[in-house]
Length: 158
Image (cartoon, rainbow, N blue to C red):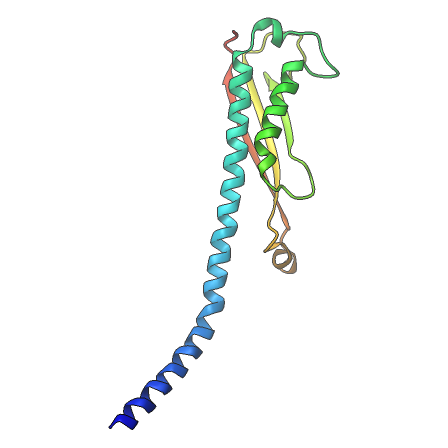
């Protein structure tokens, strides 16, 4: 009777190993998909928070600063808001291209000619996944995903 139980358990162990070999690729695919979409959400959340912080900063600057003489093509505080965003998204690994930050006053670039009613910051980040990029390109999908976060508020002045 003992021989029969031992034989049965060794046969069961073999079938469990075969079942595990069939299920393992599916589990790995599900896990990698969850991690991939988790990274997308993380990148977008960081970009959106950075845009919100820059908009909060710009909404509170004084009227003199928002109408300061132009430095190149934009007011100096817009460059400061841009650096706030770039500092906050520096922890991300956005891929080959750096993040793009646009500071808008009433829908156009903040040029200092008028006091804006609404301020917006648009952050664009390319997210590249180091693990799945080769898999995505094999299936004809883009290896980079463009994430765009926009935050707007009314200008209150300071």
